[in-house]
Length: 168
Image (tube, rainbow, N blue to C red; front, side, top):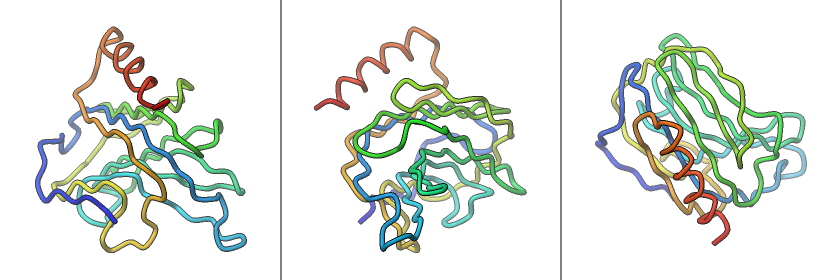
């Protein structure tokens, strides 16, 4: 199942934003006895077109569950990810999508900046998967919030709020 919004007010082109989520991924890393499966938490932009959309996925690499944010750059996509912690269970994510780079934070672990200029086109906003994709999110999605870029004080307050909701 997925929640689909045909229109939304979120930034297009190279417009910066932050995507915050508290979600739980309960799917095993290698479902079906060894097949690594990507699970899509949310995205927006043209359906199935990574190079012109933005989103958060649970990806896998060498049987390790990893949180990833992708930002389409027109010709391809920038994938910001963390080597640890594993993206399993209920966790808090923050994706900082800037005009020239993207950074992911998972449960307080801050990743590096991944360069890339967003080229997001209009398309539906989808939470929990895509209607044309079989690998829907497996687990509850507690909160999703998309904001403009936050200053350090606002980000600290939202981190405290989201961390408390993570534990509910």
